[in-house]
Length: 83
Image (cartoon, rainbow, N blue to C red; front, side, top):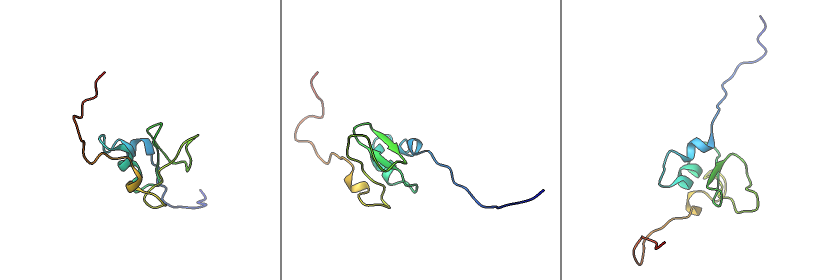
């Protein structure tokens, strides 16, 4: 038996990170300890640094972070939308 190297490896799933907060998946994604980024139009948390044909919200350790996530602070009228 020959040991070439030893070390720790961390595996993560960005899609699972966004599920940590169902009501604010973008915040959960870009606030994670992993370098996950949010694709708003696809509602997708990904390890990639680009989203096809759309803006990307980068992880808090990069440039934009959680303050770039879409949020509703208050409503002027009913939260219900007629169908």
